[in-house]
Length: 358
Ligand SMILES: Nc1ncnc2c1ncn2[C@@H]1O[C@H](COP(=O)(O)OP(=O)(O)OP(=O)(O)O)[C@@H](O)[C@H]1O
Ligand SMILES: [Mg+2]
Image (cartoon, rainbow, N blue to C red; front, top):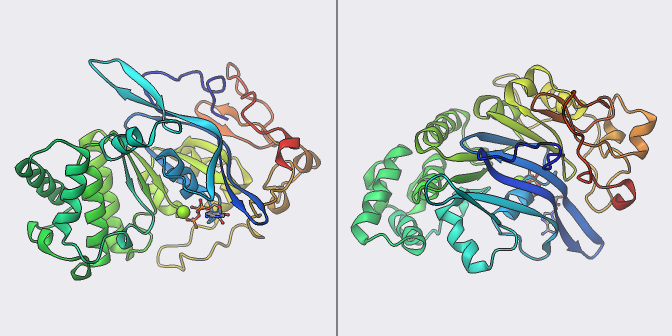
């Protein structure tokens, strides 16, 4: 787990420091422990890819960081410290999870913008595109009408939208164009962090390619950090600098993207990579991993992946593997790798004790 001990470099490069984050949902059958002890550091100006099968907790985590957790969901434990640059080079850290709602509303858009899952459908069908973008700019900044309009057109251009699109209604746009509108809105206030949740999943593969490249270019040119959420490993291979693999509410492997693909360590990561379909193949079926993801109402004991793991050992059934740095910058929570690299400190207290899991 990437707490301050496992990763002592909480330094000026740290943008977001997520510690022991648990986000659960109350249900009639008990608590769904959707995010269940995530420790993660996001660095300034990186593209961080968050991966994992459907239901592993990606959206819950993303929305949690944004202060958008709504009942029946709630923050059970943890912190998400966002380091904002203030005057000169000094930074202040604020826990996004305890900010008063009005301050969090200010942070959203200005500092952290969100491109939600299914963003194409969040546009209001009865309002022109310009109204939807301008209202957001007015609400979260002090820009004049002229400034806001100029900024809107600038952002639309960045995502390849003609100015005439501003006067249109969502139904007049293709899926790709609608998605571009949501990205234009997200970058309109020059946030430090954009969290994009499956922004291209619903789109045609060719459109997806173009938008991915645009997003990457925008992140680089604006100096913005991007957390990119998708279960599509092929997209991560193209987009990410570093990757985090989630399984059953936990981060199981965090590494630079090249290492993730060249030397995946966790059997789950290996399965995800093995299941990437060939280009033009059926992208919807996951073939590399047998069995189904477990229910967040009753996680398996020990390593949560053990019932599906081809390499499961006795210890995996009983003991939660801690997240260890097994090569420089490469973290994995798996009993196959019991020894951290020399100098790295094993995470302590970040992994839930086995008795906590039941
Ligand atoms: N309102 C809710 N009430 C109860 N359980 C919920 C609720 N919302 C989400 N969950 C559960 O939390 C878990 C994580 O869901 P989440 O949407 O975060 O997953 P995800 O990784 O984003 O999946 P996908 O790839 O399908 O978008 C799932 O098991 C889901 O059923
Ligand atoms: Mg999701």
